[in-house]
Image 1 (tube, helix red, strand yellow):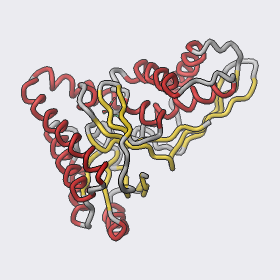
Image 2 (image 1 turned 30 degrees about the vertical axis):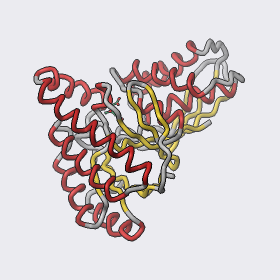
Image 3 (image 1 turned 90 degrees about the horizontal axis):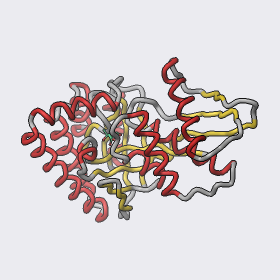
Length: 293
Ligand code: MEV
């Protein structure tokens, strides 16, 4: 069974504080899991894992087996084309794919809500204090407006053409979320004001998505990026990538995910896809074009 990747359009980080965020599924990127009967439970994968990541994966598999009361042993075969540590939700995708595959193999028929709840528990164990947006958008595979663990599906008026480019390595999400928490605790008033601003942008973006207002959506992405800069979550490279794609004709651009590296996204029209891709090619060798329906 498979699970897709995701990208956050608006509201990353502030969603951890109960503010809303919008995320979309990326179906071109996915994790696939297959199970073979075995004497002991073990895994094989095309993912490049260091020793501690291998340990975490073993733990994740054991955790899911225990929570689903699975006694049988399996060889768990995992393949993925999702870049890790970029903002694509690779860990939530892995959890959802594992849970779906165990559910199918053992005829558990787990409903989406249960898959999502279990994937959220797994995210909490391995990633500190996640908001739950990654596991939710990946479990439902729909564009969502997410707040306080509740997802509202957004009816999309027009397809969105996004170009996603990786700016390079970034710290782990857990680290960046913890650092922002520290800065927030030292100056709550200042940070709440910025969070308010992002909340307003995200609510306007929900409306713009529903109405298919791409120019407005692009402007809101630029505003969200500025607010993320104020939270010290951008990087020089992300900033220059965003300003260059706007010069090349994108409706708007912003960093996406936990920031300080990793992905940026640009919203483009059909006529500017090539110019924007060209503008990014000198900064990134990992550029994807996706259409979100
Ligand atoms: C990570 O994809 C998004 C963050 O907002 C963290 C979270 O929501 O758990 C940075």
